[in-house]
Image (cartoon, rainbow, N blue to C red; front, side):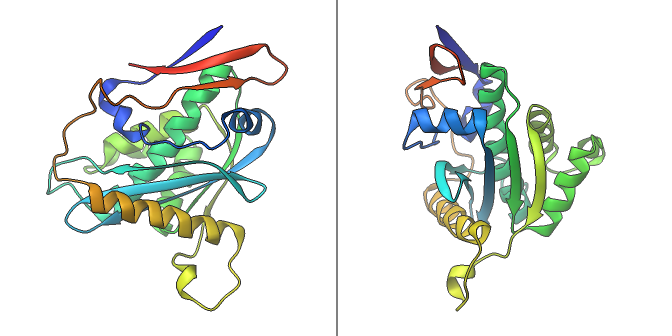
Length: 219
């Protein structure tokens, strides 16, 4: 049986760089365990985002990509919210395809984003009153509605630069920051839209107590 993960063409850039080491394990984790997702964003002249998802301190998925928008739209906050939009969109699509509602905690080193996420969890229509970044809010809010968000928390950033004993979320933040930095370094202003030659990854995976299914991504 084939399950199609459908995503509008203009949004595919958010998830096309997802990397998964063990596809079977990812679906088992999504179906049975609680995941921790930590996202980050970066901005120089261009913007980039990165995120990692882990269960029991083991990373099961990660992603990085560009932050889209005109030059005057780009900001450090847009980079942060784009990373969270990417992560929640990805797991929302899997949840819908498998008809499950996975437990996920969301973490960011941007306290403003964390507060906005808490409002979105309460179904507060924040995006309707925003002049900037409303597109990323709409994606994040719609995606979160398909997930069981157990916690939204703030994590201290750049703990790899300090002589400390970082927590699990702080370690994950370091990895997300590396991905965001990589994305910033490879992004271009007004980067062209996703094209048919570079679709997001497709996986063969097993749903909990279900026959073998194949996941494929499409427009």
